Length: 254
Image 1 (spheres, rainbow, N blue to C red):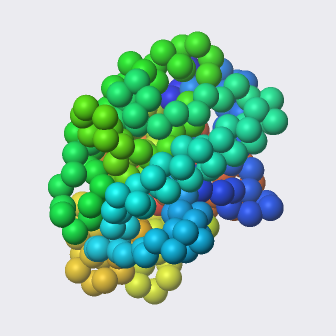
Image 2: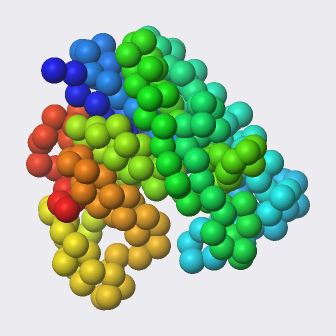
């Protein structure tokens, strides 16, 4: 039975030892159905600096004005997405790049005036992805949503990955980072995270910053029966190990 795995990676590969894209292609060759969701925050920051457009963050999210949204779309959809698709093709895979605007894949709405053109997900059209997967393609998704009728919005990539996994009823959702998983206050790995422990870690200030949207996305997916995990993407072969159920990293349970 072909397994559907949604993997969230950063805007660039995690380093010279990273084998994530090789893992994606290998899984695809073996008959599985990987879906890639990527970020690109560092490159967006770099381009905003080059264009002298100020970057401001509100509660860990990038405030995106009318000037900045054009840069966000250009970098995520035009540069990062194209690079990742090219890398997968070079490895022998068949990838198709898209963002949430394409086919109305991810609909969203603005929800905070302080954030400007930043959206929260209101829907995912899983049929768009199923069509690509059925055709033998690897979807590579940039986290840009569509606010009807035609406004693109910047969305946190972790959130998009969780909502895509939930809508697809994927077998697994894997967040690849540069650490072994979620670490507790003493720096030890948390092998399994439920809502009660997540709440305690938030209150203690251990679960903070960019880890919050990852954990929230994992819980959203886990509620729909998706096996959701966070693991170290710098370890060769890690994606396949997690996707096939090996107990590594942090597993999130609903």
